[in-house]
Image (cartoon, rainbow, N blue to C red; front, side):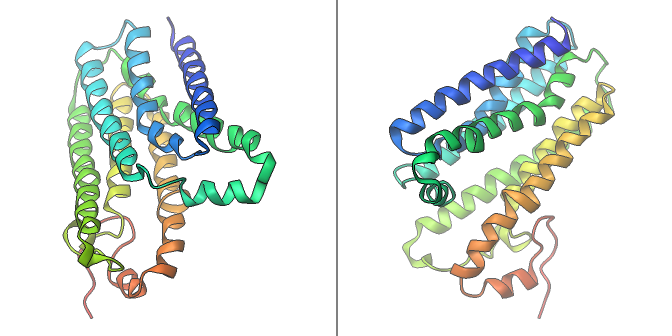
Length: 259
C-alpha cells in the first residue's frame, strides 16, 4: 500500500472510531469521552501505518510505534482516571446548554469529527516516519532524547498535580513546586516536546514539511485548547495566580523570577 492510500485508509478508521464514540456520548450525555480518545487515536494511527506500510526501516518503525503507544496510552489512561465520575467537562457542558436541542448533531462535527480530523492531520509525521527506509542517524537520537524529556515533563507534571490535589489540605491552593516552579504548564510543554520528537523522526526520513505538525500542536497547546483556555478559568478561581504568572513562565521551563 502506498502512503496516500494508507493515510486515507487511516482517516476512514479514525472517522469510524469517532462516529461510534459520538453515538456512545449521546447515550451517556457526555461529549467529554472524546478527550480519552485523543492519545488512543494516535496509537491507532501509528499501528495502522505500521501494518499497512510493509516497507520502511524496521528499527525506526518499532521504536516509533513503541514511543507513540507509551505516550498515547498513558495520556488516555490519565485523562480517563482524572475525569472518572466527575460529570461532563465544563467546556462541553457549556456548549450543551448554549445549543440545546441542536447539541447532539452539532457535537458530531464541533467535537468528534473535528478531533478526529486533527488526529489525522497532526499524525502525518507518524505516516512518513513509518514509511522511511533511511538509516538511523543523529536526528533519530535527538528525537529520542526530546521524547524522553517531554515524557518526563508531561508524566511527572501530571503525577505531581494529581498528588497535590489528592491532599485535602491543598484545596483552593496553587501548586508552585516541583516542575510547576519552572513552568505553569509542564504537562503541556512535555506534550508539545514529544510531538517535536515525532516530527524529528519524520525529518530523519527526509520529510522537512512534517515539522508543520509539531508547530501546529505547539500553537494549539499554547494559544488555543491548552494554556490559554485553562488560564481563563484559573485566573478567576485561584487566589494568587497573578503573582504566579508574574514569577513563572507559561510554557517553556525556566528559573522562576525573584521578587
